Length: 189
Image (tube, rainbow, N blue to C red; front, side, top):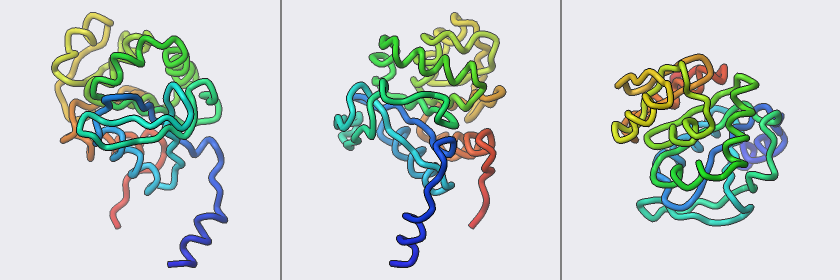
């Protein structure tokens, strides 16, 4: 076991092998932690970001998550993609101009924008869903359609560099699609 830890420390991934995950109060616990763990397992660095560096947030079900950095400390050019978890967190974060500009920067670079459940609210407010096929919680179907997206009721929808899913039960399909878009297809063990 010690050898594995030493090898892990010695092999630093380039920043482009890093993916951002948005964090804030009342995030959907599984929709933040499952992608973070799957990304790490696939060899990516998963950086959790929010309004303030080192701030701790509680998910809807009480699980804590601490920010690795503040939104203002990151640049989309240094990352391969961004994950927008659901819960009630997206409703607050979509009001933050810095969050919206960050998502727009990923759009301009055609890098992964992955959202699940209510996470597409952030993509809607960033203005990046028009003309795209999308899914999300059925509760935001009208929001997606009104923003110009084509709603598809499926466990996962991929449209170019956009990946979206409906709910926590869809996480296995969601992450398999995210890894495919990131160029690391899911492999069996």
